[in-house]
Amino acid sequence: MNATTDQVWSWLGEVPDPEIPVISVVDLGIVRDVAFDGDECVVTITPTYSGCPAMQVIADTVKEALHAHGLARVRLVSRLSPAWTTDWMSDTGKAALKGYGIAPPVQQAIDISGLRGGVKRGSFVEPEVVCPNCGSRHTQLTSQFGSTPCKALYKCLDCREPFDYFKCH
Amino acid sequence: MDAKIEYLLRQGDNALILSQQLSQLCGKGPALEEDMALTNVALDLLGQTRMWLTYAGELEGKERDEDQLAFHRDAIDYRNVLLVEQPNASYAETMMRQFLFDSWHYFLMQGLLQSSDPRIAEIAEKSFKEVTYHLRRSGDLVVRLGDGTDVSRARMQAALDDLWMYSGEVFIYDAIDNAMVEQGIAPKAEDLRAAFLDHVNDILLEATLVMPSPEAWMQRGGKQGRHSEHLGFILAEMQFLQRAYPGAEW
Image (spheres, each protein chain N blue to C red):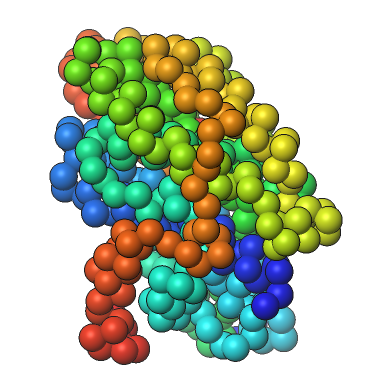
């Protein structure tokens, strides 16, 4: 069958991230390119974190979804550079995260490391993270590492709920 | 063997052995947050291992993929530095080992961003973000535990004194490392060492710990395959399944 790249993009927009199913792989910003090589559909994806165990599942899900839409030949290509950053996440994606109880990234990841302030102690300014449960700005970092590589642990000092923060990267 | 393949194995093996060591603490961290941090760092390092060893296997051209390189080589063929194979003797030792490693790893990845080999520069670009988080965390903990109670300070100082002699091997360049510098692939030892000492000195000062002499004699040999007895035990556990059931897949 013949499909346009626009169609493929819209199909991919319905493929959920396996760990955060409220956000699609397109909204997460990990689909970098869609192209056709003859009748083969080539989808380029980039990992969020190099050890992210969800990447294999994502690749399988993308293939399955495109097969289901009638594309017989699908190839997944992984691209490392430019490295994924949270800036590539769509506004729809960020809103969906918040509704799901995960605070979306609040800063722009501007420098090469995606982290302002480098590694000198005291030079790093903790971002002001808003509690996804009660909307309070009175929150505190519990740990830079959370339930998946892309998240940090926070707690709200007002409603007392712990929550995940999708960290800037 | 081609110098670049050796260099890639060194990077991959450093990340792999340290990842394996941290994985051993999964479920045994002193607090839930620490447990998650240790395993997150282990996972990042494992992902980095994969990128390095896949590239090494491709250049080698003997159809060895990253799994074969990880599970089918014995200690003498491993190219990691001695620092990463030092045991998880206590949490102080684990965190000090991590801090010394991260402090070098961060500046190495930063240097490799400018590598003349585009694939190496890409791997460094991906790793550098992760390594930045690692170094921030290990530096924070060294300060918290060093400038902590009398007991925690004494333990951190003892760990530093124990591990210091393993901190210099990464800066002792041999023919392989020098070939990489000449080809514009890797940064110079003296640049990395200056940045490393500057950062370590800052953190240790804040942690109220006494930095041993940078001119002290340093252990060496891991990069050339001469390892301590610890590596054999690490590999015995890590490679058990593939040795018992060669070629087994999930």
